[in-house]
Length: 195
Ligand SMILES: [Zn+2]
Image (cartoon, rainbow, N blue to C red; front, side, top):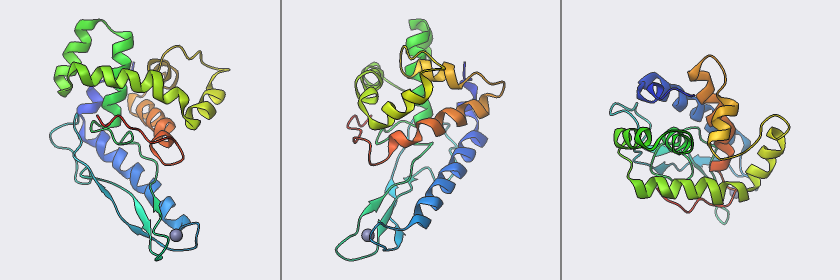
């Protein structure tokens, strides 16, 4: 199981931020499909669930806007930090949802109070994984890649088990968050569950 302790470690969040910066830079370099240049137009964020000393940079999600009048199209890179528009950090949403499927109710209560997540929010996350994710274009592709290897019984627990089998919890998390990062961008149906 992917270690919960990692979520309390500032270096983990600093590393995820550096991955998001790289993802943002490659989006920016691609330019707009109209040929216009992409300018920074980040979305403000006030994420919950991380350590109290989250590094600077967690108050926004990277995003860009075309600089040509009449286009102004947005380009938002994938993110390993934010899961769509959810308020809680992606890793926390994944961890608690997976624990809910795998652990005893008492463990889930402990974890939820640790991260300040109420029961209604956990229930919404369950619906997100059960009803929304399987219907996305991302998941149809991702599942086809995984199915010969992994039996997908329940999301996200099956994914955590499939991608979190290494010896290094740090790398396990990064692999999992990178894998899920396309779920957070345009081209996938927008994520309407805001918490
Ligand atoms: Zn454009």
